[in-house]
Image 1: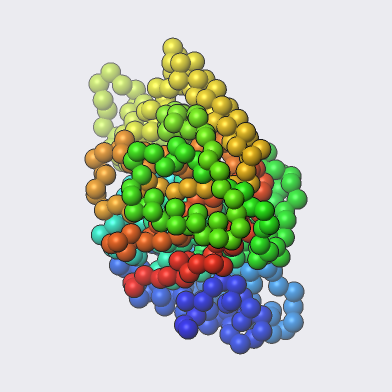
Image 2 (image 1 turned 90 degrees about the vertical axis):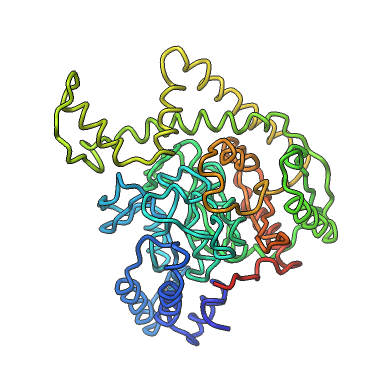
Length: 492
C-alpha cells in the first residue's frame, strides 16, 4: 500500500518506529497534490519547500531522540480562513487575497506544538458562505468521486483533499454543516465539535455564535487523533470552554454498551432522496446488529431551523464583515472618480465592497443588515434567538431519552456543479439536517455509510449532547469497525 493510502494513525506509527520518515511521508502527499490537484482544485496554496524543511527538522529531532508532539511529522491541510503568520489567509475572497496575518490562529499554534506540518491552505466558499465551494472567488473545487459534481461546502477543499489522498488530515470549520456536509459528499469522516470545545481565536469569523473548527479525516480513529491535538481552553477566546479534554485516542476503539439511538422523525420526511434514506436506514440496522436500541425522537422546532439560521447567521455576518471596507482591512478600489451627491469616503467604501465581495456574501450581508435594522430587529432577530432557545430545549429533552441522534447529513448526495447556482433557496434547504446542531451548540459527526447507484458517497450523521465527543467518536468507530465504507477511495 502506498503511503498516501495509509491512515494518519498508521503513518504516525510507522514514523515512530523508524520504518518511514516524515520527509518521505510529506513528499508522497506533495507528489499526490502535484499529480492531481490541477484536476480537483482542493488547494489554494502549497509551499513544498517549507513543508519539506519542517519534515526534515522533525526527522532530525526524532533521530536524536528528542521529545516530539502528538502529530510529529504528519501533514495537515488547513482551510484558508485560519490565520497563518506570514502566509496569506484569503477566505477565498478577492477582499482578502493579499491579506497576510501577523499571528497564528490557536489551532495552528496547537498543530505546531504537536509537530504537525501544515501542507497547504484549502479552498472554500467565500468567507465560508455556501454549501458547494462554488462561491470561492479563487477557483472551483471538484468532487474526487465525480468531477462534474461539487465537493460540498464551505469546507469543500478540506474534504476533497482527504478524499483524493492529498492529505491524511485536514481542518475545516462548521457554521451550519460546513464540515459534515462536504465530508458526506466526499466520503470522508468529519466532526463538528461542541461549540467551545476548540478555540476560535484566529478564525476569520462568519457567525461568531455558530462557527466551530473541527477535523476531517479518512476514519473516526484519525479524527480523534486530530481533535486530541486541537481541543482545549484558550484564554484568548472567551467562548472557549475550560473543560478538560478527554484522551480521545485512548478510548476511541472501546465499544459502547447499551447504546440507545434516537431517529429524528423530521429528518426522514419529504425531501429526503430515497437512495440516501436507504443507506442511512441500512447503517441504523448495523447499529441494531451491534446491540443498539433505536427509538423515534421528535425535534418539533427543527422545522424552523433553516429560517432561524438564515436570520441569525447573516445578522452576525453583517457585523463581522463590516470591517472589510477598503480602509481598515482588505481590498481597496483603484477607481477614485467622484460620484455626484456622494462623499469620497462613502464612494470608496461602496466600490471596494462591490468589487471585492461575491454575490452570496453580499446577499447574506444584506439579509443580516435588514434583520438588524430599526423596526425589524425585534420581529426577526430577537424572535430567531427565542426559537433558537426552543431548538436547544428540544435537543436537551431528546438527550434525556437517548445517547445520540442518528439520521442523514444531507437530503441528497453531491449535486452537479452549477445545478443550484441560480437557486439559493434550494441550496439553503440542503442544510436542513445540519443547522440545528450549530444552533443548539451540540456535537455532530458525519461518517460514510454507503453509495448511491451512480457511485456517490452518502453520510450518516450522529449528534451528541454537549462535550460528549469522547463517546460520539466511540460510537462512530463502532460503526466503522463493522463496515468498510470509510475505506473506499475514488479513482482520481
